[in-house]
Length: 314
Image 1 (cartoon, one colour):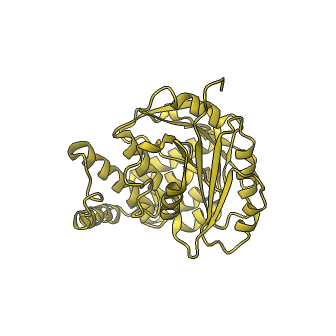
Image 2 (cartoon, rainbow, N blue to C red; image 1 turned 30 degrees about the vertical axis):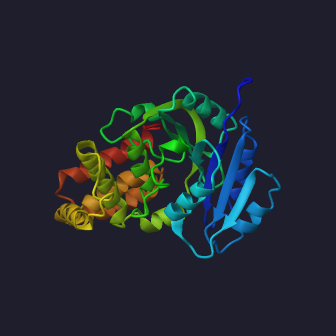
Image 3 (spheres, rainbow, N blue to C red; image 1 turned 60 degrees about the vertical axis):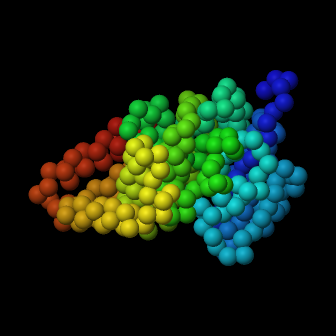
């Protein structure tokens, strides 16, 4: 990156039962052309050999910790943040892979302004690391009302984090979506329009949870909180106003329950984004049996067909 002093990049990696993939994740960081980094790994009380595998890497830039109990991703991420020394931060999932040029290109972008945070395009990969014929081009989502810029591709300034909270542990999922929208309140998002991050599609846990209501309630709450911050500069979660959150959650549930196939249609969209098209079709069939007179179920089928046969990139 030239003769300028390179800022330290702190890479935060919470890890739980990632023994199959964590070596690839760590190696992809070691192989970066940007070399002034520290990697902070915390094994979240795994029941496999995640910790032992991470410990086998003898790079002095790697710092390894272990939780005595399972604390989940939000708390583990926030705790690792307190241990970070870098001016710039990123969060790297323990089962994903970064392109060797990723950090160099993103840091080149973020250094142009203290008001920037930066992402990149993301490619899906199979469990075995082979590319799936699907990726996310961020340029296609930035003009949406609630752009989903929060994901593991983000690189951001440490100073952007208020009170040491990256992820709010209220969320069991979509905490990264919430984080990205919170950053957008005060910072400008920039994107490197190249596929520099490889997201591993591990279907086991996803396929078990695709019809859990909180998977669809939480995105609605994320957007609700975003709207509150836009108007009032603060949201109900910041205020610990759990009565308001409970009322909003009830309204979301009422809307879901009043539409017989709403949950299945939302699940189809969720699964298609993860290239789980066969599972999406099975779920669509469940929705069709419950609600075959609803025209929206057939619109959902057209979306499924389009994604399966025509669509490669968002």
